[in-house]
Length: 473
Image (cartoon, rainbow, N blue to C red; front, side, top):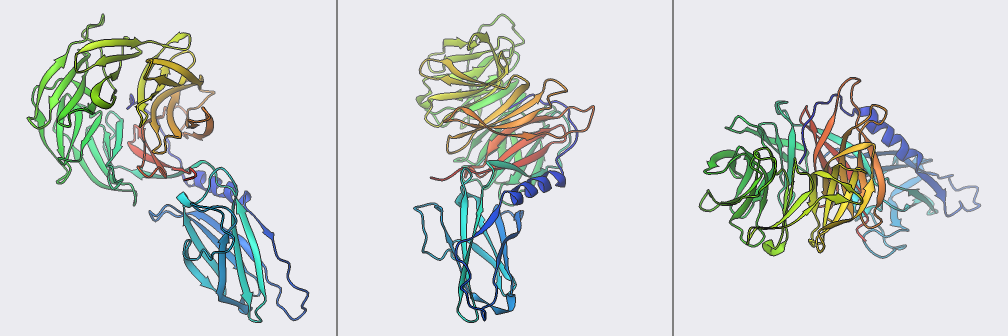
């Protein structure tokens, strides 16, 4: 979740074209078997790739087109593919892979195949061996070697939502069939496969929508908007407000009681308890602070069994750690390294051992790793020229994606892909915008299969989509 700001501009076809050019320049073909010294044999040559591109039909594939000379003498049925690098398994140098790679063309003009991103290795060479025979039975083999980048800008989803306030949260159902973004006063429902907007539903309240909490088992979605608003997933409609809720911002479901929803209450800075079956706020945890009534809780995370709950603090800064069962304050985490910090967003690892924190205001700014066993930030990645905004963790738990905002005009904001295991920078992505305008990239989420990254962009309320390539091994 993030604070919306104004911006302008959008990445266009030129960005994708530059990525495509870099991709092609990084590919090369090398001969493995020399044409036999037979003057009657045709001089065959496999040209690869003549055309390599990102497929935008929703399948998220890489297309590779291969042509051969003396096309009239090639037997298309003789074409064989095999890999010299693993494709989701041990190295294979014998199996015909035409049944693995999807073939869209196989004739005398050439071969056009494409493969899912999950099967291609991002960190090392991918080698595709292509073998064909001429009409006399002479077989010739070439190998295409190419390296895919870790990530790349992919496309943009035009949400069509009114540019009021900004994008605050993105989430997906567990199967990855539906995505939901709060955009101003609208819930935007989109298909993460076809990358098309399915529905836009304007809330009944006057305020911006904030955090999203999904209750798939009961078929509802809850969003913060003053009151907690209840949204029916089946009919794509807001059905009612939850009585008793107040100035709600952050939301998270209990991990000990499926009917209990914790709510971060703005202005008071208290923690609310909502029974979603009874559909009412049933309790609260009053948290004393010196800035009442101006405190905000914009982000929440809870450990297994509800042993600890973490909350951001807008004015006090740092992260407050509480026991929501006993309503005791356990710790106020205020320092990252030697300095005080403020955080706008964080994300909890699947095993609950790490809380990765976007250090929005700190020295240095960047990403912090909070050890939940000690409730202290044990390591920091420094991106001091940017203002970290929102953060997401990939399903493999090996990648973090961080969105940032502009700090200095000389250092335009860039979104950053991080290697968690090596605790280091992998790749950054430009945020093009028109001179004199301010662009803010806000909420971010990985699709459940990990192949795509979705970023909400303010104030135009677009969704930028990035490729994420991680080896499945």
